[in-house]
Length: 236
Image (cartoon, rainbow, N blue to C red; front, side, top):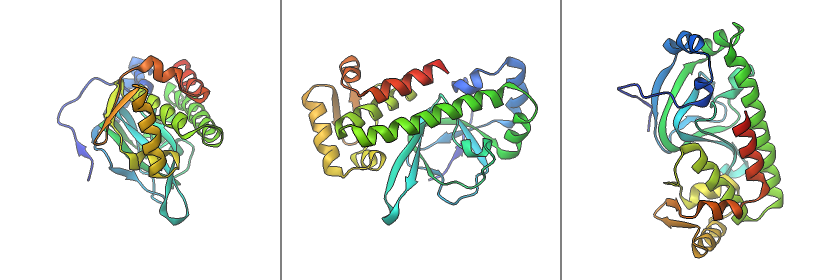
């Protein structure tokens, strides 16, 4: 699979870009290229040289750490609230994670050189990315604590709610295999936990498509990790 340029411009929904003053966004706009993000596309792999950053308008990009034996564990997730390729902002040019499109959508892509130029001119983007960097650090910290302290079902609930928040919808594609990679448990454990959520009438699941049918009840069953991550993202 590959990235394809979109034919027409859609309104910018990415919150980082939307937060820029109008004059700064207009200056930046010629350096932004709208691209389609296709589910399961690998944007960059471990060891790849980073050449672009992505500001999602729609869709979700999952950041996966590689472990011995080829297995992976999700270490972060980016949607319209942020930017994928954050190491470039920090001066790191080699990827240490695999960046994979989880949910299809679109993003504004920017070259490394253009990002460097914009962040060195004293504008607002650099400050916005510093705050977003903290949000991502908090997400990683909280996810690590969740992995250590909470049940498989609670971890799945957190991840379903985070996906819903980033696409603004209660229905999306997410296979058991993908969930297994994201939260680091065997597929059988995912099936048991998803079955429990179905029996509670919180979700429906069919052929890789999940629908949240009782959002308030699902939030009530989530661990504290979800609310901590959510509060930071909405206050940024």
